[in-house]
Length: 406
Image (cartoon, rainbow, N blue to C red; front, side, top):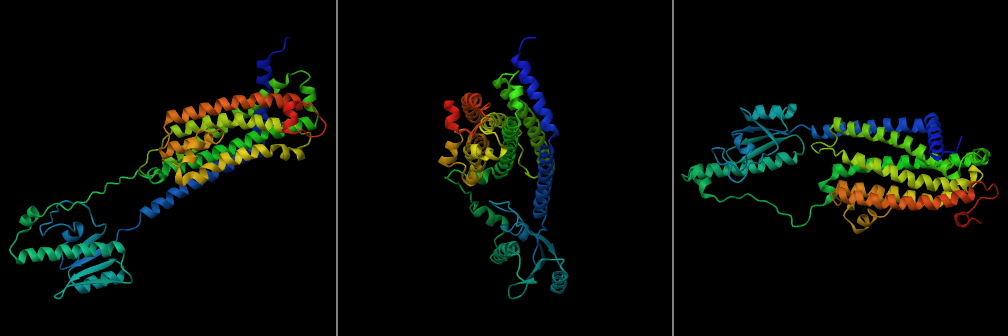
C-alpha cells in the first residue's frame, strides 16, 4: 500500500482530537469558563436591572397643581412651549400640610412641597434627592410665573404665544467618543477576544507539550519511521485547531445567546458578526501559535526545558492578549489603529476596533487576510525548525541553531 499524505494527516488529526477530548484539564477548563461566563452575564444583567429599577422619587403637593411638576416649563393651563421633558419625579396632590408631613415621615413620599402665605415649604427627612430639588425649583418658578400672569391680566395662552422658544439643542462639533458611543459593544467584544485568546493559548500550548512528551519518550522516532515529519506535524496542528475551534464556537455561541437573553446590553442589538470574526481569528491564531509552539516543543527533549524555548512566543501571546485591555478606553488612538493591522495583535485589536466603530468589516477582513498570509510564512519557518530539530535528542536547540540546522 502506497504512502498517502492526506491519510496520514487525517489519522494524526483524528488521534489528536480524541486525546484532547479525553484530557481532563482541557474539558475542565471548558466547563469552568462556560460556568463563569454564564454566571457573569446573568449576574451583570441582574445588577443592571436592579440599578435601573430604582424607584422614582415621589413628591407630594399641597396648594400646587401637578402640572407644574409634570411639565415645569408649562403655563397655567399645563401647555409647554419648546420643551416636553419630564421632571423625573412622580407627583401627587395631598389635601393638607399635616397629611403631607405624615406621608413623608411614613416613607410614602420622598418629600412634600407646600404653598404657604409667605412662599413655599419643602418637607423632607434628611437631605432631599437632587431630582426632587431640581423638580421643586422648576415647579416653583412655573407656579410663581402663572400667578404673576393672572395678577396682570395676561392669559397663559397669550403669554405662551408671545414667548419665543427657549428650546436648547447642543451640537457637539467634536466627534463623539467611541468608547462612550459603543461602550456595551466594546466591553462585550473585549470579553469575547479574551476568551478567544485564552483558548488559543490553551490549545496551542497543548501542541508543544504533546510534541515534547512524544520526543522525550522516543515515541516520535517510531512514528516518523513510517510517517513524514511534515505530515505528522500538520495532523497535530490541524487536529488541535479543529477541536479548539469547536470548543471555542460552543463557548462563544453560548455567551452570545446568554447576552441576548439576559438583556445585558439593554437596547443595544448584539452583532453576531463579531462572533464569526472571533472564530475566524481563533483559526488564524491557532495555526500561528500552534505551529510556533510545535517548533518550540521539537527543540527540547525534556518537558522541563520547554519553557525556555517558549519565551519568545510568550511575548507575542502577551502582546495579543493585553493590547485590547490597555487600549479599550482609547480605541481611536494611533497605536490601536496601527496594531489593528499588525499580526498577531490584529487578531484581538481589529474586532475591538470594529466594535468601537473605528474599523469597518471590510477593513477587519483585510487585516485578517494579512494575518493569514503572515501565518503561512510562519508555518514555512516552523517547518524548517521542526525538520532540523525533531530527531535531535541531544541538548536543547536554540531558535537560531534550529533554523540553520546546525
